[in-house]
Image (cartoon, rainbow, N blue to C red; front, side, top):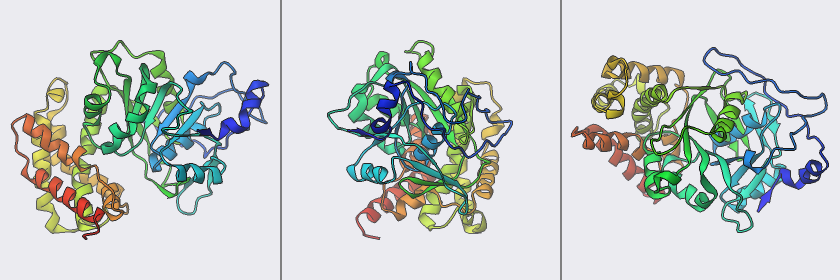
Length: 395
């Protein structure tokens, strides 16, 4: 079942018509972010290229705050790509229908909501839909990656591009083990890091904390695949141009180091705020927490220093010292002091967490390298127990 823009636009496309001009939130510029390209447009609308085929359609899987934010930003382009939202349950599809298949985004609590759409929405698993997916953005929680992709894996081909905007590390390796097991048949991967504060007021209403955030994206190398094709460039370029996303491209070696710094901060903030049931800023204010997070960071620093993928790079080894990781983590605390971490929210709402892709990943990589990480292992098990107990209404 595909619903949304197609219901009202099929006749327009058939006649070579144009669609309404998309309203945007404006552009915030930053030296670190890629400025959107300008496209020809008329005062009354954007004229779509009729040669645009289904191979130019971008699908989004995972319609939480980040998925909705990215969809809204793509639709804010002067000449937006075709975007389909992959919906996993009938009730969510009906909620989109009741809002005319549109997503609203406002900047700050008092901001004016700006609507984008209508989007096409497809209910996953519907037997009537099965077009190939050449461009896919994945925003589901890391533990759900393989199970979320499994129902649509037959639609993803080796020249498809899959872009992940997720927390944690290790999800691509697990995806390859469970879903795309044949190296030569795997899609091409991009990985993105989002540095925006976004939350949902409802399924179709997102709130952006401000316009100072940005995102970074890079191509994940694979020795089994030929150099990245034009298909990957299409998705990459649309993300780089998306105005509110403010995305910049990094080489994989640089993106990996950014990922690791973010991971270290997440390995402290997420489990500790979830266990203590506090916002991020409380971590810095509680002196009893300091010895605990320092032990975490010492273990993480030791693992990072021995990672083969880092040793092969020319990088400043002091960047991942325990002191440097602590400085980076505390800087994150200062910038997000009023935020409630995703893991805390997951625990409060009885959902599974991403702990196995954060501290759990540190423990697993440490074991591979012969490094013991008892503090990270303890926190991983504690969060798993707390999550399980909460889901069972024990606590």
